[in-house]
Length: 310
Ligand code: PPE
Image (cartoon, rainbow, N blue to C red):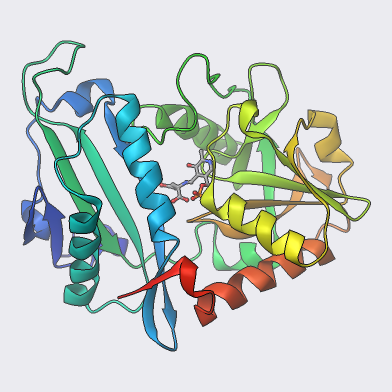
């Protein structure tokens, strides 16, 4: 127990290839295709504690993206969406969790090696664990200090950026390591053209003169589900949202406000970029409004079509 990472300390079981197995038994072979070539796809989903009990936020959209990501690599997930839904709910119930992070993963497993994964079996797993504020609890209030990475985001013409592929996260890992080594909490990654793409695990929003901008899907970003949520919440509050923006590095420095969105990061303010203070160097008013709307939503579970009660 004690040598487990803290976040997994109380997890008893994992669902793997159709069965609930003990946490310690959720293992793969060394010659797993995805371990060598990164041929896996995954999701990150949050389940929130609401008055009606645990509720999974925008599960269907995450599941759709999961199967779409798999399709890009000809990964045929050998389970119906309904089966994965039931397994996830059962896992959350078995673990007795009121809120958690959910990690579905599908990958080419142990089979012949070589780049064509054709004969490798597809393996599927579901894990859940409690995961607090991704960039720290204070980050949600005070904002994070970020740096533009020297690593560029791979272009969607090189690797599809709308698929959430395990292997491609080496790009995020490099950006994240660099930011932390230089004393920043998180990175912003520019695309091949040199415009803003996203964070290593977040989409990015900019506020200028009362209007909201977020980088467009053609800027080599992941089509984030929290991004979609933030756009909708902002529009409902009367904001003009430019959701196909091209944002230059310089525009980051002169923004009134900046914030990240993501399943793990939720809505996190950015207080500085490359040591340039953004706005007043604290959470800005528009960010605060969107963040409050977001947490009110997920804690109330009120918009029924966006929640699946466990
Ligand atoms: N861009 C990237 C590159 C990304 O990984 C994420 C999610 C997003 C944008 C936001 O997408 P969405 O979660 O659908 O709003 N990053 C996941 C992985 C984080 C991790 O460290 O692992 C997440 O937030 O679950």
